[in-house]
Length: 268
Image (cartoon, rainbow, N blue to C red; front, side):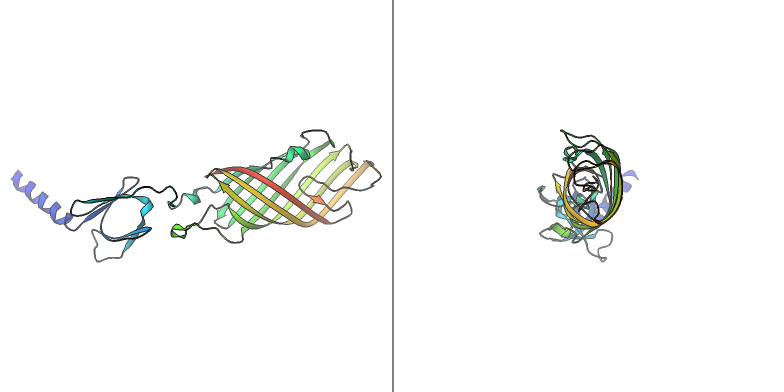
């Protein structure tokens, strides 16, 4: 009786296995199927339990090998330049800073959060006061927040996958606010200063080594300021151009502008 059961079991396995291939993925998961085509970047197949069903596809970069029904195997070497789905899109956040800001009398910390491959929220807070070298003494803080829109989403060639969520050329409306006191020096007056600005920023963010991000941008917009001066710094009365979060074309001008270089670390 036992021999009969074993024989029937082996027969069933043989029948089910007939005409069946096996795709072994790089994570060692197996797909029982019938391979119909091995292309340049994709492998097409039908599921073993539904050979009359639809055709599925899988990227060759995901496949370790194919074991065919006759027992032969075809292995696929891993191409370091190939794109594994999702690998580029795993990085949706970044912590950033402007590395040269201490030269201008402040330090800052920024955060980026990708919402979609072409949209992201960007925020930054800054502490005014710490600086490298001599210069104007100021103390205060600033903040800015923006909504980033990528002009043309970047893609990679294989399968036309999205590139990194946070990389690419973008346009970014943003709001900034700065408040600080200054003891004067150079071409600045002493007093308390504050300014709010609405800026339109154009820039490009780049990714290096799946770890670092670099961003170069320029902004222009409109500012509202309040300068409570108590001592004049120089003969340039009322001349105030720098609010740390942005600059202005003179103390009486509503035009605000900013150029910045930021770098950061990508996070998943």
